[in-house]
Length: 133
Image 1 (cartoon, rainbow, N blue to C red):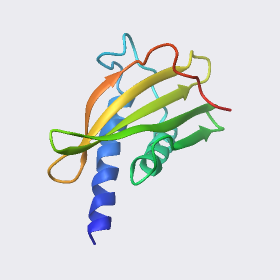
Image 2: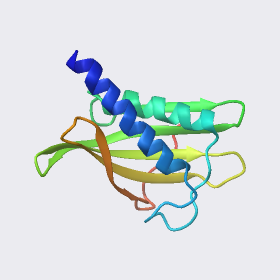
Image 3: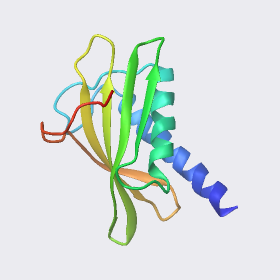
């Protein structure tokens, strides 16, 4: 029962993250973030769900939408504690048709209610490797 609640809360947090990603602007990313089609967003969220909960650091989950030619990868960089909360540092790589690749990091931490809260988003240093084929 606790696992179902945990999964439900995680899904809710990822929907919040997805809504943020689909918005026109993302604070701290230096410019307009590309708009994702609903199916691209769904596939990215599914990959993130699989990569956050109980996965080992370094775990990568890929996604692709053949209809839009969008693809991406979600990588769990680090699990850590901040202010007594369980947190995750996640690297996102996005390649959308006709656009330059997007790479950014998100820091998500558990809320007291058991969900996930996006605390920070940033573009990583240019030395971060691009999407794996």
